[in-house]
Length: 315
Ligand SMILES: [Zn+2]
Image (cartoon, rainbow, N blue to C red; front, side, top):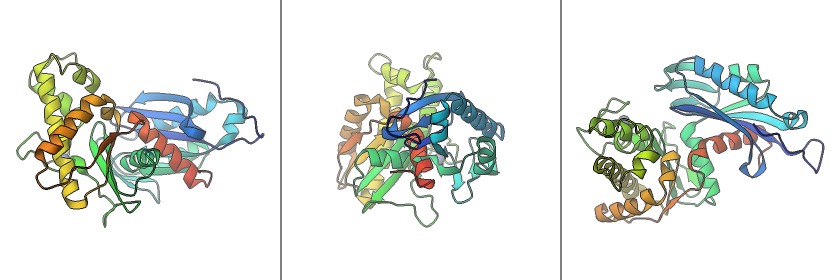
């Protein structure tokens, strides 16, 4: 854990945020300052059920304890990017299937433990918001967050489409391969069964791939000499292409921006995806596809922005 730099301009200094991104495999926490710079950062493995809330609080206590007294005084609030259905007004997890939580308060117990105001957002909204802002807030864009699962937010006329239910953007659960692998949502052949990190690794194992491979980066690194890895990656590209083209047919976004851990595959993702979309587009216009520089940090930085915005100290 790094020591916070001493602010030069004033005793109070700029506001800092304590941010958390609660993912399928790990809970990431960080103290984030101006320019998205993390003063301290840590993570723990994700546990399911109520213990995950204890883990978040403990991670927060450790991060705060590692700061100088001055930096600690600059922490204005806490932002949490949380999976599943979230009531942002009350800071409650309504349903998080992967964490096995239903109607569980998140903000209140964390505020009590950490002694700071806590704002909770859906993880995709937080990550997509950070990616979109980092990309210069284009008026018309599809921002996809590619991680354990797949989700997206579409921006039209500079605003995110949330839909009547508030749940627009479940790109990961668009069926692109009817009869394909069973998804966590109960359907078969959803985009994320092919293009989510979990789905890719399960598919690779099912095909008889090397059991030592436990991450998508390793899988991608093998695509030039391991036919099974190449097959899984190609299927993922096809699923993403079809998902993006479906959104394109309805909303014609001006640009597609890719973030999240799987987007760290870089050119291995971007070039075949552009080609696959062009091959399968039919009459649908294929917009430019770009990579966000935020990668797997998008959720954490989105949570930091949320914390500062909700305490009135954000930019
Ligand atoms: Zn699904």
